[in-house]
Length: 152
Image (cartoon, rainbow, N blue to C red; front, side):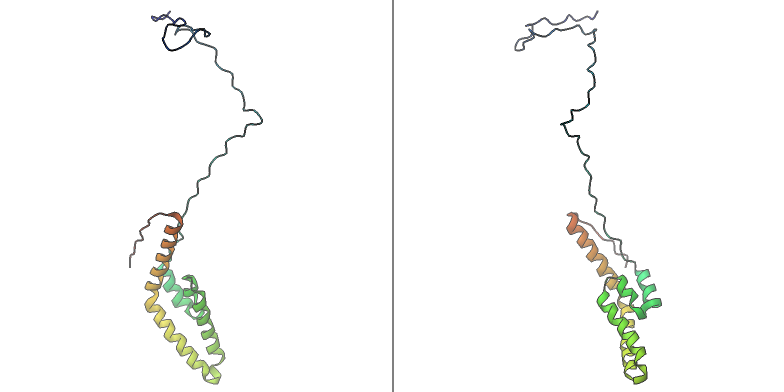
């Protein structure tokens, strides 16, 4: 038996215990049986969290490797997301070699070579601009402020 006496109906002012059977602290009531939700009740659906990930940053080393090894096909410009100028370089390269016999091809190849050298000099700037544009786009989509580390 516990040291406290059970409350009797009407003992506590402001509360009505008339229709309740109170038991002492030491006695336990029977546990409530578990019942599954009724068929008309919908089970709560899990909430899927949407995570925005920034696009992978373009690497300057990859851009230089593509420019040196496959520059005649404009691969570095395709890599940096500039397909229009990449196709122009491709046309200059192949058009130059196809018309070199006529003499016009030499001019096209010279234009391509000058453009390729300028690209080799401006690749770090082009890569940085692409990466900053991607980070700005990511920040606009998510509403987050993202700082971009510029090692070059």
